[in-house]
Structure formats: C-alpha cells, structure tokens
Length: 368
Image (cartoon, rainbow, N blue to C red; front, side, top):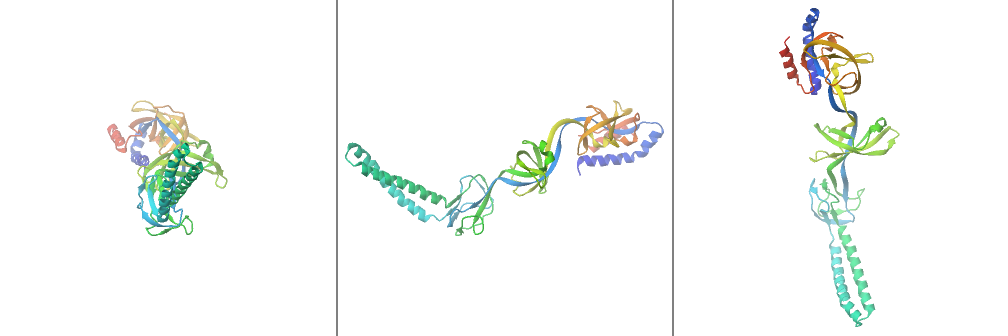
C-alpha cells in the first residue's frame, strides 16, 4: 500500500475516533477541529498506461557460412565480447595450403616484374615478357584475396559489442550453414547496453505521442525498480484491427538487469506542465459540481465554500484548473462536518512531505 493511501486511511480512522468530541463541540457552538492542506504548485503530467516487450538494441543468430568441421571455440556462455573478436574457427587447412602455394607464385611474379622493368627501360628485355609477369602478379593477387575470403568464412567473429548466449556446438561438430531446419545456430549475440521497448497505445493518444516523451517502465521481475527512457520512434501506420499505434522507446541497461523478451508495464508521461494540486480527500462532489472548504489564516476561523474545476487525478491528489490560488488552505479531514461559514480550529497542516507521526504530533500539541 502506498504512503499516500496509508496516510489517508489512518487519518480517516483518527477523525472517526474524534467524532464524538466534534459532535459535543458542535452542540456547544464550538469550532470543529480539522486538518488542512495548502494548495501546492507542482510539475505534473498525464499518464497513459501500456504493455510492451523488450528486445536487445542489436541481436543476431551466429551461423556458419560453409559446411565445415569446428576446430576451436573462443567463448563461453554469456561472455561479454567486442566487435571483431574471433569466436569460432573451422577447419581451413586446405585453404591455408592453397594460400601458401599462391603466395609463392606471387613472390616469384613480383621478383620478375622488379627485375624486368629496368631492363625494358634500357631495351635489354622485351615488353611482352614484362607484361606476362605483370599478368601473373595480378592473377596471384586476386587468387590470394579469394583464398583469404574463404578462410574468413571459416571464422565466426562478433559483429558488434555484446553478450553471447548459450553455446550450441562443440569442437569436432560439423557446422551447417543456415539457421532453419538442418542449419547450425552456433550461438546468439545481443547488445544489451540499451534495450528497445516496443508497445502500442490507442489512436486517441496519437496527438500527444511524440518523440522524446519520457516513459517509466516496470517488470514483475523487479517490482521495486523503475526504468526510465524516452520514445524514439512511432510507427507510420495505425493497426486497423486494434485501432492502436506502435511506438518504440529506448531504455538504458547499465546493470544488465533487462533481458530480451521481458514484459514491461509502461507509464507514458504526456502533457508535462506546472499546475495547482490539492489532496483528493478535500473535494466535495455534489452532482456535477465540485467544491472545497477554504480557511483563512489563524488557528480558529471560519471556512468558506468554493467551487473548483478539476483537471487530472493522481495518486491521492487532484489538479485544480480554477477556483483556488497558490497558498490557499483547504480542509482535508473533517470536511463533511463543516458548512459554509462554520467555525473551525486547525489541528494540523497536512503537507505532501508531512508524515503521519508529524500530523499526530501537531494535533496533540493543539490539545483536544
């Protein structure tokens, strides 16, 4: 139970216990003891609730490009890796032998080209002979690039910084290309430094859904922790079946608590503003009209009834659009026992920061 609700329940119990005292005072014409609260100015916002699913900022299944036997593995489950780290090597003995042979041809062609160029310049060797060795050199260079590419295909490297998942292969296994039926998923890799949170909101909120709007998200796995982020993108289409629009927010994940696939409860903070607020228990509703009892300065004075126009409601508080000014004091507890013009005695001032014990101490200092 929240502190606001707990305070409200306790104060209601206190005033129920004081009911007999208040009735006796009223019969003698004495003032009614009340608690009051000042009208406060706060930064508030409207909330839109939604459900969303997390996914990693970047994620990929690592698979083989060729069918080959695995010769070395350089990672463990859930290991943090850097972009370019070699994770798996496959048998490339044949390709390495071809590379050695072609490198020998490249060296010989390069040596002949260097020998013949000054001779051709002096007229001591034919130009056609030089052209032939230059073709041999170019061909060797191209073949070396092709062989190195085949060797690279037999290495699995990390495409970005991230965390690898579970290892699904062992040394000696035959890796098979593709991630579908018959293919080999070697492992997964996720960049979880930031998390994408995809969610949907009804189209009626489309006008207030903008990039940069702050959100708060919670998960059942961490009920006491709130994760903050902001909307980064909004879908260009409305789903005609659900009449909702998909949006995406980014959440920082420095402690790596969030995992891909987690369900998150989202509060979207829209229309941020500064407004006057009072405790919700101060409102007296009569039909479609809402009013409060306002007191003047002093410990024993009269109350005046004022009609107010309400805005958004929050946990234990309500926004006042008109009818009150900042620093006005409204009756919170005892409001149903007073009328317009009634005399009251202020037993305690209930501010948003005041604890229940502080209110009780104030009341005790005022006496019965």
